[in-house]
Image (tube, rainbow, N blue to C red; front, side, top):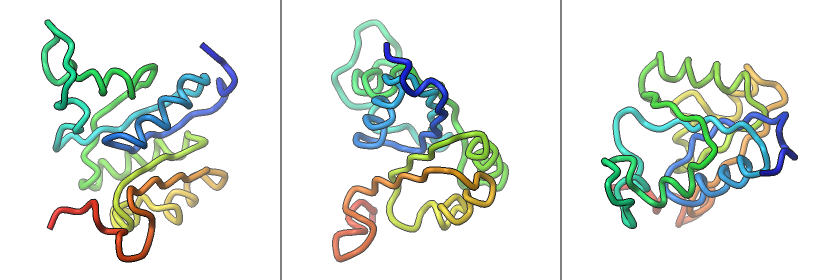
Length: 144
């Protein structure tokens, strides 16, 4: 395992595929990655196959194991005031924040770049929204 990024802490606010994969690569390079999962709903990777035999759900998902290797993790309710405050404190101690919510979600939670730069002036903020930050496809990941 590489230690190239051993002095870097990443706050991982991602779900599904691209975000967890990107932060797994940072962990592979030695970064300390703290993955925040929702305390309200299970990440898709935990409930889709392939599954490991003899391992109880929700830990059995093969994609979950692949994309979240070498990461620390916690469950936080980002819709609660306490959850947002905990996340802001984690961001204040991080070098990089990676999120892949729909455009505007993080800002609406009080966790957008403008919010987090107040507690971490040198933060690198990476947004990996699935269909881009604007335009006619930007909101395609939402449920209506």
